[in-house]
Amino acid sequence: MSEGQVSVSGNREAVSLLVDCDTGIDDALALAYLCSQPQVELVAVSSTPGNVAAEQVARNNLSLLELCGRPDVPVAIGARAPLRIPLVTTPETHGPQGIGYAELPEPRGKVDEVDAVELWVETVRSRPGELTAMLTAPLTNFSLALRAEPRLPELLRGVVIMGGSYYYQGNTTPTAEWNTHVDPDAAAEVFTAFSGLPEDRLPVACALETTERIELTPEHVAAFAAEAGCTEPELVLPDQPEGRRSTASNELVRHVSDMLRFYFEFHRHYGQGYVAHIHDYFAASVATGTARYRTRTATVHVETAAPKLIGTTVADFRGLWGEPPNARIVSENHPQEAFVELVRSLGGLARRLENPAV
Ligand code: BDR
Ligand code: CA
Image (cartoon, rainbow, N blue to C red):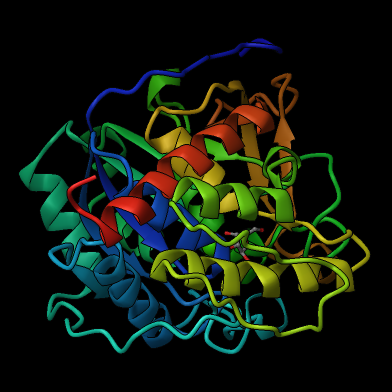
């Protein structure tokens, strides 16, 4: 492998996605964004325990998909816990239900009877070469799917992962990113499964150092609401009382605003300012091909044993270990473009949901 190898994307072709998420405020934004993209076929959404427990993730997914006009998309549950270690959730980051202050309507639909792992394997086998995997959660379900069908890397059209932090400080421990930290064993299995495949088959890993650049601010919320057609400005401001609820006339705007207020408060609480890192939305824009980005091939090792380093990802960009590459790590992205795209696309969806004729 050579240092500095790059790939660039930025088109708007039809894409069929299998999504696995742990919804989660930024997962919720990612899902809503996917629903706003007409060229995206959302084949199924599976729910991994992470930000909240699997049942709550599935409830959030069902409710959001219904809210976004996609009640037809199957929602499944697979694993209830990481492969080898107990589940640790993060209510301080995403709120007790995973969606900040938002109170989404009780979903009408039910979780699919088929286990998520089986659903993944059967669906990918039935459409070889067609489906792209978008993984914005710990990699538990995906690693189990790989155990059940080791040919997944060849059968999938592509794989996009939000995970890992590469020579950049972690957001969970000093060196580990949340998704790899929650299930390091799964992450290690997944990267190993891609070892030695041709470069265009390697998963694109949206690294924390690039996803933290997708830093949402109150101005973006206001712009989103305006794009949705709200006549009153949507003000989510640092000097307002914590927990204040949105009164926006548009339902999607109201819920997104209530989620994001919580996320802003969380980031401020951790000294990052009144902003929100919407990691998983960036992964969604990579999976849909709407983002421009560059990658570098690397051999990724996920630490699963050393207590203080659990979940740490180390990337060998130079072939020093003498092992074949197993990932393409995003090394460059474009936050401003990402927000123009999000505001336009999600705002348009919110507007259409209230007034389908527009
Ligand atoms: C990742 O951790 C989760 O809390 C977010 O949803 C995102 O997938 C960022 O480290
Ligand atoms: Ca997530």
